[in-house]
Length: 353
Image (cartoon, rainbow, N blue to C red):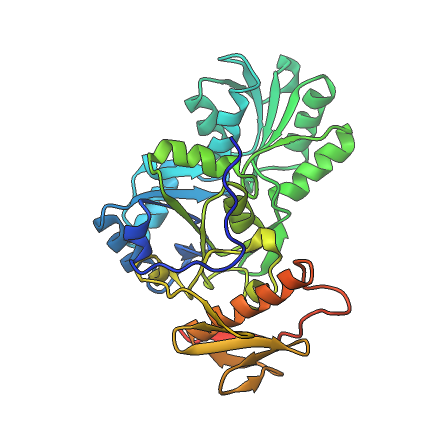
């Protein structure tokens, strides 16, 4: 069934999101932790949401970690979690594969323990060689993936095996910058085979729908830091999204977001899960959130009491929300995109935490 479309702008909630919604589908890296670093307010906020009775599901495109490994990582960051609350792109691909293959079918793994455990949990049998004539090749990122493993997958695919990718993320954030992600390695195999893979993970809505079915929540919210994966997938699934600024996509990215990427709620961090969110209101050509107001005038964003934003600006959280609302309304009035000769001029925006 096609989900009901979400409104194109920000939503309001008089109650904290943790009580207004009965479940949260939480991204991991950039939301609950940042590589080896802690994310401020993450543990207190997630644990507080749990105490209100909110069901939690940790939904990640990282296919290398098995659920127990994810739980250990979360607990190291003081976030309570259980293995049954984890749903990875590897698990998504394995569940999706049950719709295409007979139970117990043989699969060749191009990946690591996360992919292996996910396939075994769904009853599939595993091999490391194309000589066994596997029914499918399941490819997920892992540091152990090398030329030999990719080539073994290619041998099986060209012999007729179904190619399944856990996700199509082109890059993987590291402490040195962006490294090759699973999508880049999948593209190499697909280029060589000439066959398009079946793909799971974000930004496809299926991962949210499958995670939601396991969590038992009926009124969920999705929380993520990446617009083009977390929030595209959530919106496609008809699930409101909460965007946080502790990961990849910046406030400027949010303000310039295409309609398909837009979150329903904005905050600097996971405190947004346990707080109310004021609803934007219009006042002529001004958009107001709380005590802050913003509009678009002559192709520039203008903040009430400050004037046009022409250089890097530090703003309050409600001002950020008002700026995003004004920018989105302006884009919608001209076709929904922020490109071309009428492109909106937006400087770097820093939101005071």
